[in-house]
Image 1 (cartoon, rainbow, N blue to C red):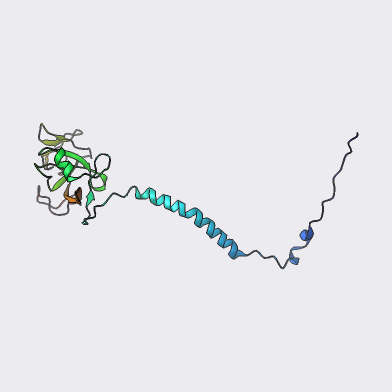
Image 2 (image 1 turned 90 degrees about the horizontal axis):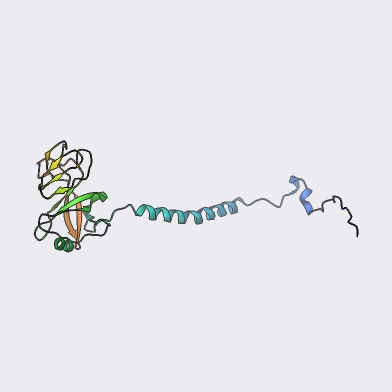
Length: 196
């Protein structure tokens, strides 16, 4: 059996493809249909992207108390709401403990025998922004970075910090502790608040 060589063959005609462009009068692409298909494609791809972006950004919005007045719920270290009942049961008189407060910043709540004080203290030093721990033995806040000291109400008593700790109002909303901005005069210094 011998193999025969088959050389190139002429292409088979495919209808009217060889006609000049001027001869086609019946076929005009429908641009409205193309625009509709592009719109459908962008919409079906864009909606899930916008939903995902919205969910991502919503994560950064802090919970707001429904009581109005700009109050924001306090959170524990895990971000769970702190109730007044659990706070009073778990703390002794004059205890100070950090919670997540306004803008997620650390605030000290101060216990009384059966409640909390009507103000909270931002625990950020006014010198260079270190978190200021409460020293129970010294009965004051002592900054570990540069030695600034604040009394039990957050008033600066020793520099280099130039200003007292910022204040926030404490309230309860449906049993949960909440903080709201302090906008009136500072009761410790009798001047307008610097943290507005």
